[in-house]
Image 1 (cartoon, rainbow, N blue to C red):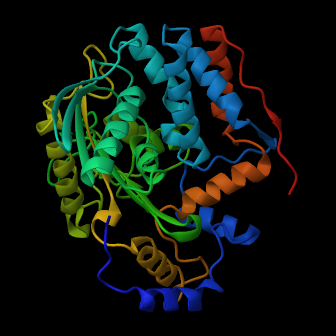
Image 2 (cartoon, helix red, strand yellow; image 1 turned 180 degrees about the horizontal axis):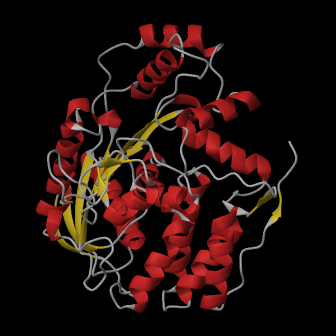
Length: 407
């Protein structure tokens, strides 16, 4: 039993005073638009034909494609659910957009679709898992479940993994812990895509980080960020849509800052979070190195420039991940109330412009609300065309589109 030795009456009073002004995210129709526009991400898919794909249809399509290359049905649907969730949450670069990469790696025998992860070291709150070169999502699910189990016993659980592959969005695993009323954290190394500050060669990955915690009444803080200025998938989507990219995202093959999406994608020299050195890009470089320590150095996986290049698939990836689950009640009670107060205070700050002040996770909630309202996920027309061609290649039924539900 945890005994709270500090009262929370002040927090309760503050929240009760503010609660009448706080509505669930998204607040109303115009706020949904504001929240999505506030991110101004190129991955937001708008199409003029007003057709959407039901979530379960996205899962079905992905799973059937993976089954065609020998993936177990249970695992194929687990991966399908993960990739669909990425698109559902508005992160199109890491959803169905990654399906063909997985299929290609399986066909080239660079991923074992039948592999199951196993625990190779287990010491109280810590464990090391070998992914056996299986699908990253299967490894990730196994590891976070183990971290959750340990957190419930010891108050904290930490699991490192080696021998894995691309595992999708970090926040998927963070949410697994949050659903158990735990703080979730995870990160992963990736193929070298980042040119460290003052370098013109990639040596570190996008190395994303996610941390999340539940507040009261379904509210939450859920951070999921790359330690590069942007994920490569965002540049890939901009290239497919013939759009330019913001300055500070990437370098060209000469090591110069570029706004040309095609040049950036071909060079694969992403800038650290923060961009150029004068804009504190060295901080993103430092964070990426931190992730490399947690994921690559501790686990024994490949790390940094030793991981296979993104566009070269002659060798296995051998990626490393790190997962943590923490019981906030092991520290003190009332943490949800305190987080609720903090999130309320942040959202209620005076605005510098017309757009609302957001906290991590607000954009995703609004993206999901939009999908739920419209009856399915709206993909860019080019992605729909590509998926139809891929369905024919894989000899599966293409995704069925339905009319978007009216407002």
